[in-house]
Each structure stands twice: as structure tokens, then as C-alpha cells.
Length: 393
Image (cartoon, rainbow, N blue to C red; front, side):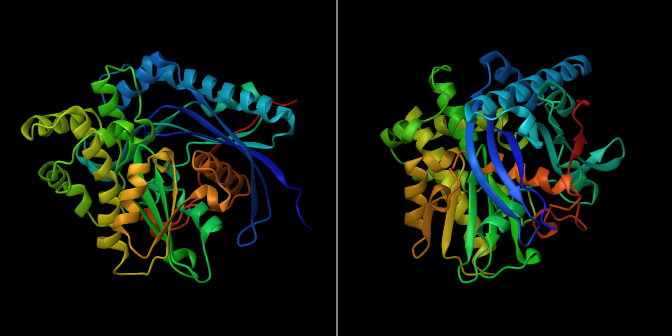
């Protein structure tokens, strides 16, 4: 007997901490016959003072337990507000929403074990209290998706490859799903792939470095380089770009993941120092960071993907999919591979990850695993997330 389709909201705030993306999906069935349709998407910006605090904490500046607790609950309120605002925009009563999947806001991610108090430890922390979301919206909420994978020896990231597999696997075409958020990550889907043949990893920085440079040079007046306007006014500095491409992270074999811990404020200071060394002007440096994003993806493809499988299409999502210079660089460096935005396949670029966490929550609700061990390095399948039930009606 077929179950009735569920309306599910997915919410996501990425490493750039710009705000909250919300997607509404109608989902039914079960893999391999899971049916998911995106019904709408929207986004809500964080108040500037809150975004500043998120970035401060994510850069590992000192914080008290009390402040962290307050921030966790305050973000829960904002995620709830975003979900309710989305319901109003989509003209749907919250009581008709069966489930919310909330990624939360990552403030720390250590995917590889490091020594801590004499023991090797891996950890991740996403905040935005899901119990608050469930209470404010009246909708059962799944949150905290990453720890279950880490508990099985995985890196807790990337998790979206499971959804990429459901959406984009193709019987005749090898595909790469590339998400350009704060960090760039890709999912490799060989032709007619089985789940264990899918692999994925973070290739390096994407919008994180570009946005940081733009904010620095405009003294916070601008937060990103719209349509690559500033980068397009800069000149190329080949020696500077060569220096960036010697980044040791690029040579690490997957599975691997990264974040603000590697490409945050300390890396920005390094980048500014390189700019001074090579006498690069502000727009030159923004251009270098933009091209570095594209070429680090190309490097990952040539180093880790091309030797294993033939790729016919690059499907690009995330904020970076709207950067014409990144897309032009990818197209120029990948002859014979079609580079296309995810909207061409029915998922708008800015909706992809929120939509993904709606699907992941749906799988958790049905007690089905939704990590891909071949992508995260986990010992086996994991049912992701923790469920906060809505208050009784």
C-alpha cells in the first residue's frame, strides 16, 4: 500500500553564514523509487550582528558555554521563523507540513581525527536548536545530521551525495554534481552507478574566500562579488595563482572535508600577505581567489576523478553557480564536458542543499540510512539526525 506523500521543509545555512535557505518538497515512496518534487524555495538573511557572531565563533574565537547555549537557542528561533515565513510565502498552513529537516549552522567541523586530551577525536557541531523549531512551528523536526556518520568512522561530510544519487544518476552519462557554497564539494556519479560506486569530497574553498576579500576591501559595504564584477576588473597574476594552487589540501586523497577551520580568517590573512608580495590590487586578489576556486575543482577532477571514470556533465549549484567567471573557467578547463546549472534539471541553484535536507529528514523519519560510506568514509550505513517531536496538539 502506497503511503500518502509528505510535505517536508528543508532548511540550510552554509559556511558563508549569509542566512537560511528554505525549500518545500513533496516526497513519497522509498529508494530506489523515491519521488521528490520541489514545490518552492525562499531565503532569509541573518541580522548583521548575528552573522558577525556566527562567524566569530566559527573562527574559533573564545566563547563561554553560556554564550554558545544562547546562540544555539537564538538560531533555533530564527530557523523556526524562516520556516514559518516560508509557509506564509507558499500559502500553506504549518499544520500541513509533516516534517522539517534542519541542517543548522556549522560552527566547527573536524572530519579527520586529531589528538585531544591524549586521545584521537573527530567531532562536528551544528547549532540551531531543533527542539525550538519543533515547538515554535508545531512540526516534528530532524536536526544534527552529521554526528551519526562520524560515530561510524566517517567524516560526517559530505551528506548531500545521497540526494545527488537519487536525483542525478543516469544510465548512460557520467556526472559530477558540484556545489559551490562557502566550500566547494563535488559528488561523482559514474554512468549507471550503484550507491557504493558514488564518491564525493570537498575540493577546497569557493565563495568563502571571495566573500571575505570583498567584505575586507569594501569595509563591509559589500558581502559578495555580484556577477564577478570586481573580479572581472582585476588583472591576472599567474605567480600568485600558482602559489595558491600549491595548497596542500588539494593533494589530500578523498574522502576529505574542510571548512572555515582551514579557509577562514587565518587563510584570509595569508591571502592578503600574498597579495602584498605580488603587488596585487584588491580586484586582482578577488580575481585570483575566484579563478582559484574553479581551478581547484578542475585539479580535483584531474587528480581524483578522471583516472577512475569518464564524466560527461558537470551540474553546478550553490551561490557560486551565479558567478560567470567561475563557470567560464570551468567550461574552458573542461573541454568535452557540459557545464550546466542545476536549474536545467529542475532544482534552482540556491535551493539544492535545503531541498537535500528535506529528503534526508524524510529518510530519517522512515528509519532508513542516508549516508554514502563511499563518500564519507564511514564503516557502514547510518540513520542520520536526531528527531525533536512537535508538542502534542
